[in-house]
Image (tube, rainbow, N blue to C red; front, side):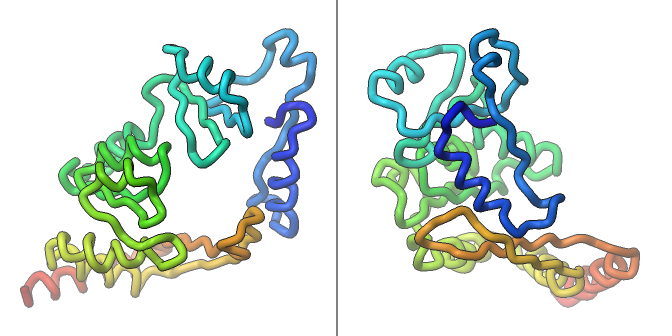
Length: 219
């Protein structure tokens, strides 16, 4: 949903251009009637772009919402307790992953709750000094493939060998679909590759289990 006269809407129009219908971001407008009557849908998050300092102070002072900057001039407003950190731990619980085995990587203020909630918080090299000081590991910047560096230099050495090999095998045997999607205008990227990995049939699962048993017997 976009506020009247929102310039942000153009970003999503360009993002959707050329994408198949099922991949397009759904868009709608706030009508002035909605804003006047308060009769609008419930939201998970509001994004305020370019708010003045007085408005930011008013929002930050409210106790009935959580507000944090996701980047310069981008203020995310959510209900209390709704954060990346709480989401990470709830997902870990759903998947049966012990909290001590959780890793998180980020570079901005809205990532901080996640970086602190995870057992292993990793700061990108382009993070602020405040975020870096609260993380266990600092990797390179986004432009220097900092995510890959963190995986190879920090994450993989901390995963037991009995788990590393099955992960590699899973990537090897499972069908991988890739599609290129036009990303939002940015200096860093022109194309975003989205990769989804699925166990399509019983054969792939059998191969994975067999490989796991073989590796476990060798180790």
